[in-house]
Length: 172
Image (tube, rainbow, N blue to C red):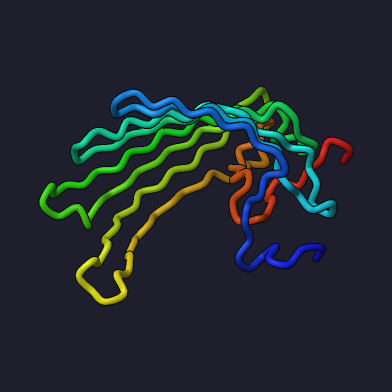
């Protein structure tokens, strides 16, 4: 392992990043371009760009959407990939903001890729306890590849957890 924490406690780091944010009222729009700081042993040549939009009104509901495009990558299933992500957060009790529910859906697509992932999560922030722990219960589902089809259906978490489940490279 060239860098420590490839498996335990990994993080995403960017060699270069460009971010632009515009906020108007309850809306925030962010444009981004990211070039990861991969170790030479894990270099994939991947860059990301996209747009994130969030609506965060002073109410019990928050929603967001993001489009990510992968213009370059040595990973065949990642090169040219588009990711569409939709998420929502709901605080059902205005008087008790410590409890909330979240949902997220992501769709990854390009000519030979069609993958999905989603999650449902319940959260409780115990602000009245001494250490103020956050409890959450999550159910997530990520599509896996079906070998009997011509498309790749395996969900690519991009830079989650420092691992790369789709290690097929262009030269293989």
